[in-house]
Length: 230
Ligand SMILES: Cc1cc2nc3c(=O)[nH]c(=O)nc-3n(C[C@H](O)[C@H](O)[C@H](O)COP(=O)(O)O)c2cc1C
Image (cartoon, rainbow, N blue to C red; front, side, top):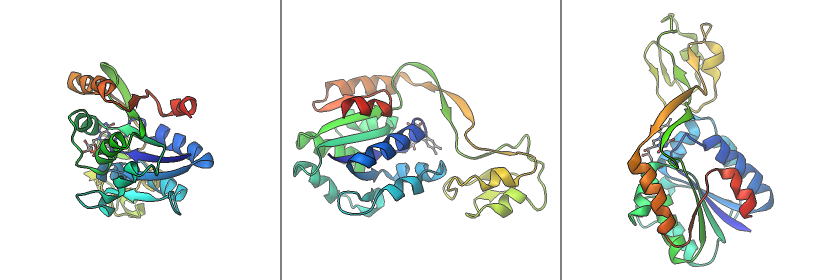
């Protein structure tokens, strides 16, 4: 089957989405698309290279938001029966809010709109599914309470992206999630994969439920549910 997979900029369910994509790519031709934030966040969590390595060749491309212009020519493929399925996983609150309001101004929201027009079945894994608090995972983080402000800072010296300002923070837009800083710091002041609790806003949960009213769109609560769909 030929499938298009869209990543948006959510850390929540990101690793689970990449794992599901890796599985899917073994048996199907998958074109991967990322929103601008999707590309950044994949890098922050050290998952961009894994995704990139799955791609290569016709209909196994990696299409970045920055490769496209405002008219998103690539999404015309959804009107030409190129793909049988579109998956968006994970889908941020921002992307869901746009989709339920018919906005199509990013690569992923545009793909969803065009998939609807081309009658291509769409499966979306929204991060804001139910009210309440959920646990989510952070990328690399400099813990200032533990940081001893060493001079020189070994974590900063070891970072291949020069992303660390010692005693201040990690610039996540430079970080590629390699984790070198975590092993380099002798005081374990850099964490990776720390779990935090975030609150789901009612407006985001409400938007997610509105997806049910859009023809051609199906909601999944976890990317592994794609196994059942396929
Ligand atoms: C490390 C990191 C993790 C994030 N995780 C989430 C998330 O789980 N859910 C979410 O809605 N936004 C998350 N965001 C914010 C989105 O990336 C941001 O709202 C972005 O503008 C979404 O754009 P997009 O919907 O076009 O991908 C995260 C941002 C960062 C830097």
